[in-house]
Image (cartoon, rainbow, N blue to C red):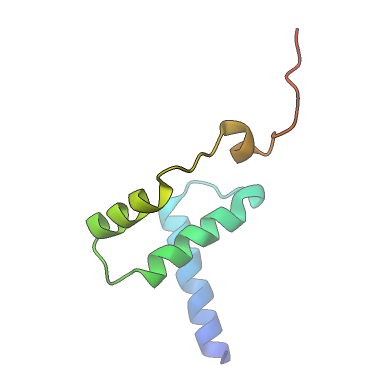
Length: 79
């Protein structure tokens, strides 16, 4: 990848993250990057079409709070 294209790609990513989120946690960075890649790859679609595509893809899938926060497999402490 030519240098200028790389710089432009990183600048676009930085603008997308700073313009959307208050803070980006390193633990979830791959999720933020996946979202930005999805938006870029589907940039010619309008928001409604992108939303409908995502909803069709998530049917039957489940993400629990413990999976999202990285606490899967931990036991709750009883006070």
